[in-house]
Image (cartoon, rainbow over all chains, first blue to last red; front, side, top):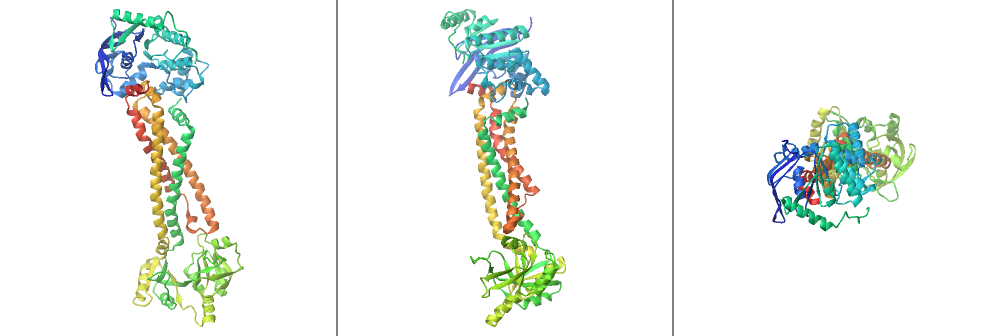
Amino acid sequence: MDAPMIDVRHVSRHYLRGGDDVHALDDVSLSIPAGKFVALMGPSGSGKSTLLNLISGIDRPSSGEVIVSGQALPDLSEDELARWRARHVGLIFQFFNLIPVLSALENVALPLLLTDLGKAERRERAETALRVVGLEDRLDHFPATMSGGEQQRVAIARAIVTDPDLIVADEPTGDLDAKNAEAILDLLRTLKKGFGKTVVMVTHDPRALRFVDDAHHLDKGLLLDDDAAERASAALHASMGPGPRTTEVEP
Amino acid sequence: MSYTRLVVANLLRNKLRTAFTAGAITLAVVLVCLLLTMPAALDRLLESAASDVRISVHHKAGLVYSMPESFARKVRAVDGVEAAAGMVWYGGAFEESGKVTFPNFAVEAEHIEAVYPDYPIKPEELADFVKYRDGALVGRQVMDKYDWKVGERVSLTSTIWPANLDFRIVGVVEDPQAPLFWFNRKYLDQALESQFGQGLGIMGTIWVRASDPSMVGSIMQTIDDMSRNSEAETASETEKSYFANFFGSLQGFIRIILLVTGLVTLCIIFIAANTASMNVRERSGEIAVLKAIGFARRSIFGALFGEVVLISSLAGLLGLLLSIGLTTSLRNFAGNDGLGPMSGFILTGPVVVQGLFLSLFIGMLAGVVPSIGAARKPVAVALREIF
């Protein structure tokens, strides 16, 4: 059997906040094969973003092992982790987090500054990434002149421009209306299908279940078993009503 | 897209703030450069004005005390003395205000050429100076200030002697740094004698020219020994030392100004550091994202530190250009209006280098703490703070 792309073994993450010992994750184990689109779901404070940070090498576990593409992440120093992230991980955030003073093309080209590529090649790759997300005609636009959906597409282009093995997305549809949210989820699925990327996404959005290969549910720092996960999923659907919400409006 | 583009784009993010910060640094560089030129200007003035073979002989008690007229003859007889010319302060005021606006002396006209062979005076004008008892040799600064011409007659009202004299300008000392007015002491001597039956009889300062620089020390010693235990003991000093003492109080003033400038510079460092900290704080989210996508601590530090150093360097260059413009203007102004030492303001190579280093120093000191702070913060902590 092939080694999983992501192998999380008995991971706990505790930290102090305001004098309290917060147990963000408790003895979580999880395997994600390569080329899968996986959702991490759960209510606020369940530990899903913490798990995503551990998988993407942004944070370190208090105990346990996180192995991604055969690399044990806790063994790496802060700078080694930064270099590893630059090579292997594409990150997408809820609020896009683009640099407002740079154009779409420049934002996308930003991670390529960490590579040995020349200026022309950096530009070519950034243009290609923007073409993949359907923004080839918005290269010189600045974030302030783009809609939320377009900004998130730029952020996705930035995440894929270095051709990473793993794409992690933290609530990528959280700040988008229904139409744009579906478009972004479809784009992430395309990255998996068309480009063979492994995509791990944190989301509250039940629509995501229609796009992902697998979903893992967390609650209070624990990974739920299948039965509990099913109950949690049903509860989530019930809380969202009978169908996808359509009340949001384009910002 | 390049690091430079990233740094420049961030600098232009808040143009007004960047302009104010750059303005503060520019001002500091201008201030420091102008003040650093002052000691150098004085040194240059001393170098240009002072000969290595000229000696000033005056009363030991100070310049306002006098020596007997006959002492000049004794000085001329000292071994190694090529020439000596005695002078007396006339204290003549030209304008109606009654203020003395340029130094004027009654001098031994026949000895001037021998004591000041290095002064740019035409031979025929020197000859006229000796020939005409009421003749006056006037420095270029004074000539230009009052728009006088050679051949013109001018009157001075003495604030010292009961003798107001009319002079005929017979020549010009073409030295832009010499605001002088010399006339023949015999003219004053006769005027006093005709009114009071007694001439000058004294010397204020005797300027001596040694035949060789190596003789200067022994000549000064001999002259001071000659006057020992007399009513007018002398203190001889080199011309450079004489002018240095003359400007001594100004140098003390300069030291105080330099101290104040240092404090102002320190304030500007704090202002720039505060601005850099504000920039980092406002962009903490972006910095966290840069770290998350793989920018290592060194890259983050370089980008932030580069911003502050770039702005301070550009501001420093602007400050230097302004300083060059200001010193040039000041020199031109001083040349026309007899500002004396100020005409020596020149932004020399060392001052330019010091100005550039100052701007870099301000940038580095202001940028290092916030940049290190932003670079060192763990990415997870930085992200947790913004999400």
